[in-house]
Image (cartoon, rainbow, N blue to C red; front, side, top):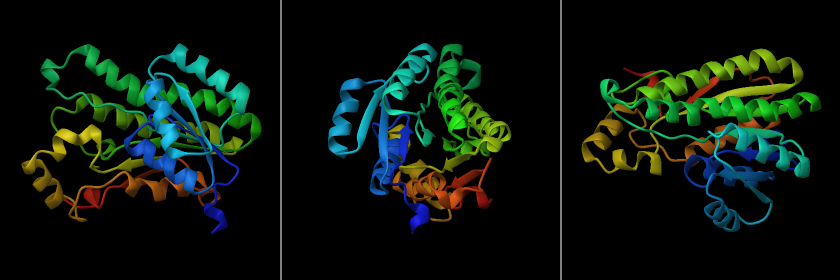
Length: 250
């Protein structure tokens, strides 16, 4: 369908060396877009780019380092122009009881999962606003809505990301931007490797999720293409749960 075609579009996906970010990058390439991969590890990023083939650019920087991010993005945009699509996907998880959680761990999780979306988002949005069009997709989580013990910084950051998504919509929609969030359920990724390896937790997930299974990064790609395409031009300020029904039941 033409409305889902991304031909001629340039997409920047943060945290795209592996996991959800890489899956979204691959889906965008399949839909016809050029894709800019991002990771702090330049060597590993180039290896991923070579695996994905043509129409792939790289931009190595740590999303939690504001000065480095701004410098890298300025250089990138000077050479290739502003992207048509931004996916704020970079994220980390550091678990621990609230009473024992180091403040440094709290700040690190919030910086990577929330503040980076503000920093990268506003930089990209300036060019999108000047052009009068653009798509921003923030990768949220079911922990925008539900929480578990020992994940407080992650849940707080992802809840904040949902609020930031709506705030971006409130300010930028009139300039032709659509800003939405995707909230994955529990996915079988490297971030969740320890949970996937735990038979008791996997049993709980499969019983708790109506779909009866762990999700995969590929489960996110269809909605990500939709939100990047003209098919979603009147969808704005929404956080869309892609969770196998987890948040729909008790």
